[in-house]
Length: 159
Image 1 (tube, helix red, strand yellow):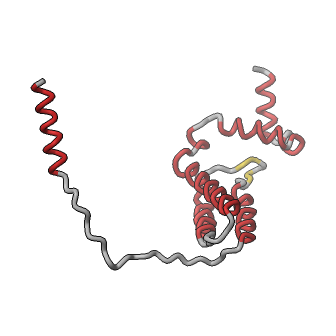
Image 2: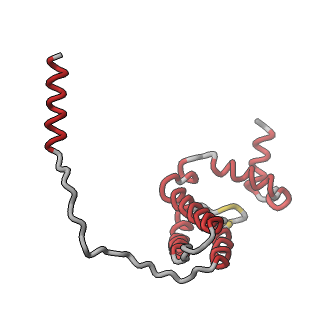
Image 3: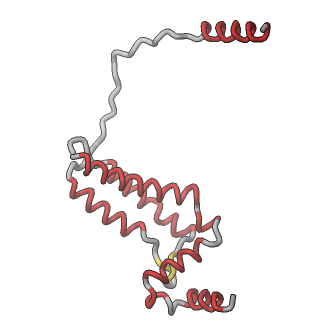
């Protein structure tokens, strides 16, 4: 009982000591002006197609190249694509078009997160294996003759 009373008194003092006065709002409101270069939905569609082309990794000897050098070379391009997306004004667009903009935005952020944080090509030894299996399923004739896939298929048969 004494502990409860002491605790209650401490909480009351703590709450009363908090400054609850609201700060005066500044009469000079600062507004950020964005430099939009477009408000046309077709610009978003064109950017999306450009994004999808960029998103596919370049090939090195027929296999996707996820080397650090490749990511360093491609780094400025992702920033440029993100800037182009931010420069599209969606204010007066219908909701479904705004959702499309957000989907492109989310995909670009996902790529950036994958590149900076997750790095599955560095951390996950099965990353290339899964990628190879996926490509074999999607493009069987194109990839079956590649030396890496030939070794992988041979190893699978003997396990």
